[in-house]
Image 1 (tube, rainbow, N blue to C red):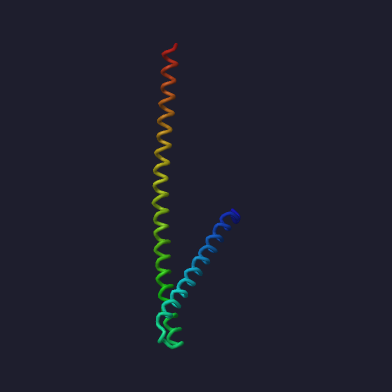
Image 2: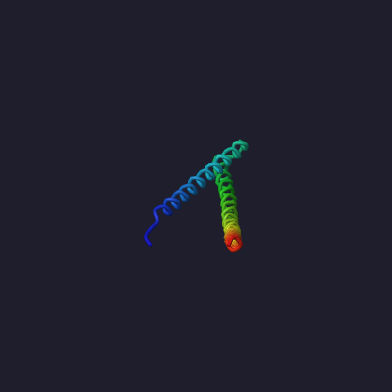
Length: 115
């Protein structure tokens, strides 16, 4: 089977979304770091840069860990819901078969009695 343009597009969009989300998170971390160091006016320029770098790195690590947890949980939920869907689907098919069998049996009885 050849490449699937629809799947490739979906994958590309998901990657782009991830890239944009991560860049927004990184910018938010830098903004918070600057705001934090603005509250410490006695820092030298070098100290301010160090604090901002450490703060940003810490925030990035926390964000990365959160994204991993969310991703793992999403995969777990996808598995759980797929399993539930399959179970529900089997039940619906079984119910449809029983209903069709019952209707067919009723029609046979009515036809037999009408003779």
